[in-house]
Image (cartoon, rainbow, N blue to C red; front, top):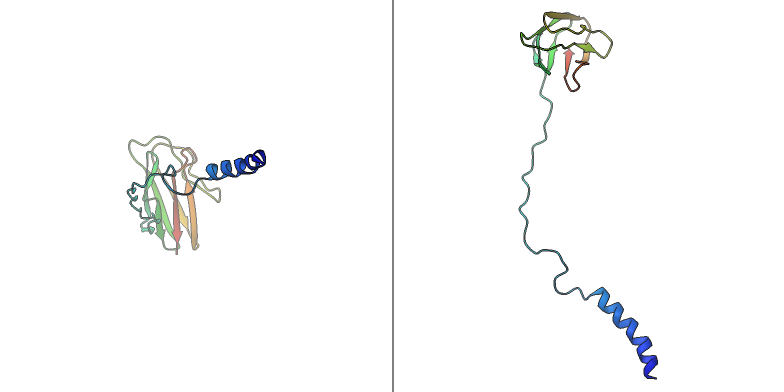
Length: 129
């Protein structure tokens, strides 16, 4: 009878010990943590009302502009600029250059994204309205 008791009681005891009782230290710290400071999400800035953009090393300034229909926009390469281009999604492009100017006239309303295909992340838009 004693062997039967051991056979029934021992597994139950081991199971109870393995599961723990939920008391005591479970391995996690009760030390409070310092909350992180929330960040303000960045929103794209409104396009600037201008018809002039400077092409300099790895950026268009300003990158996003707004003009009226019929406006000719001028991109001017900065004096110390490396080779860049102004390439629109519709295929119109300035070609690679490191000095000079490029112009394009926008006769219809819309948003015209452009980029420098030599430098990923160098992008801008012309909004015509």
